[in-house]
Image 1 (cartoon, rainbow, N blue to C red):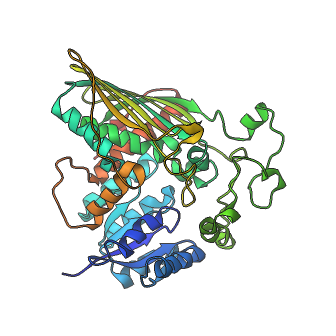
Image 2: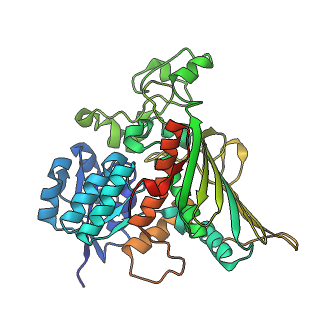
Image 3: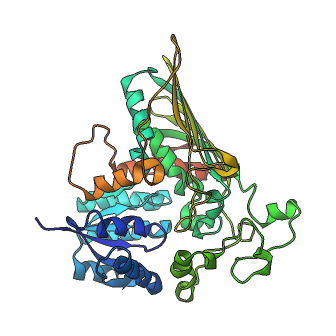
Length: 433
């Protein structure tokens, strides 16, 4: 049986998640055939890791303007898109038109116009787009789906969902390209697409109306000035003002970050270590969203990106009771070291995952959760197995299509429109399926 052929576009912080799996556990059935990126230095470093870390062969490299040439020469069956968010649609659509199926990082894209273009391209080509929603595969999130399907709390009428990003992980979005909303769609699209997808997945529904409020309250130069900060810098590397700043990222302390970003700056000018209290930040760090779903359930959602712990709290209120979920996560800097130490949260809080079921007439009880290993609550290795492993049945239907990808980002896209207008937004008016 011939190996399935994969080409990877975007060789940044998330890329090794995919090429490491292809060169490792799934090398007997899958073949990595090419890298494509705007930066040759970064691709060369990835090839070095393939050889030294995975004992795999180097693969041909193509610059982004050679994308079509890459497909013609290497003939991949699948394109994995892990580039900057605003470019996803370009690689997805052209890949579909040239006969490839697509595996794309979330978010599928960042606005309604690009989302519509992807939907139309799938219809036109008959090819497949899959979105890598790894949180669907985390054992705790699968268990929540199972509980709701079982009817243990009856019909779910409302959900409260609070997501906390800590000052390591949360701050990192304000150092990177994500800080410019034109690149990422802001956290309502780039990050919250995970969370909005989970609600769609858990309740088996889709959003109808979205209203959002929020802004940049903690990060950014103006907020720092208002708090009396006087030492400013635009990037940490080479800046005396960054010395001693707990929010500064020192690229020279981490050989991986230095090789992937610092050494690659000469080609594309991208600075990975920008100040979270500098100029040029156009995304929000404090967000609240109210969503009404087509099954009449409502969601109250909040995200804050500067907290002393990381994780999420979810409560489901139904006709027969309530489910409360608490998840504490390790913080991480993308493509860098984890902080703090394994298994310990900032401030001494231990990782803790709990599901508490409170029947309307009966004593509350906790639900045993299978302990997941790997990133995103144990979802990462299960997602990789589902993508690259042998086909298998999944009673929870966790594989996410372009329709799932669209319905998750449309909540965030509608939220962004609501932030601008101050009005609720009807999701069905944004795209046509």
